Length: 284
Image (cartoon, rainbow, N blue to C red; front, side, top):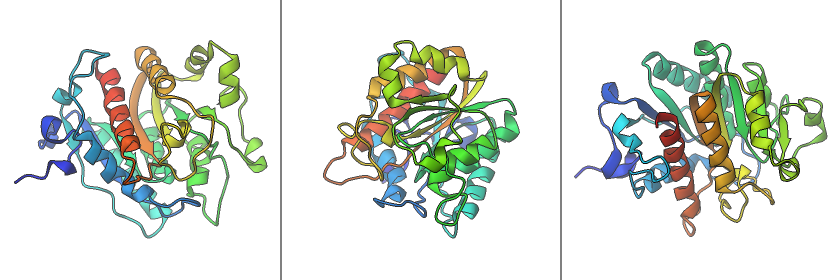
């Protein structure tokens, strides 16, 4: 009997034909540099398992994006170092882009995104990166590595302009790297009803999106390695991404930092639903 829990969208929406699929899900269960709550390496499996309970009709777009073909890749298992893991991700994402697949990376901690940034830069030299995150992740190095999860967006800046949304935690060292035009702190969003338009104005035509799930308020997303109070809600993030999809070209995205909790599976489903709804917006 086939085990549908290994495939994104489960029994109702999986695709086993790589050549026919337009979308590729790449799990990266890596948790080598996280600094507080461990467990992000279990995130991809939990998200994919939860995706099996999704309904395939997206009500808001009136579409069934699974018909585009969603293929689930074998996980990236390189774990000797964050540098080697990043290279493995870069190679894998590069291969997907050459095969004209839309890449969706599921982490794992935020360091898994670094390889994706590098791969995207080779195919879209004028792209920008839109980050949703509670943390700036702008350290140059942390605990002896430039590839630590706390350095993800500093490495991103080496590849493309970055726009940061929802940040509410940052060390003094990181503050010197903040671009005031493209940093949208959480507290500023409340004071600016036009913040979404301001974000759009900072983006280039082609956009890669990286979402650390701790951008959400812990009331709806407690299952992260470094939760922060006073986060965004689901609609805040999805409505922003909807506008990006309408006015720009989303070239890929990642969802990272889920630390699943067996007692509360709701965050696992939130992450799976978010992936499916972003894909629905991209392909509608």
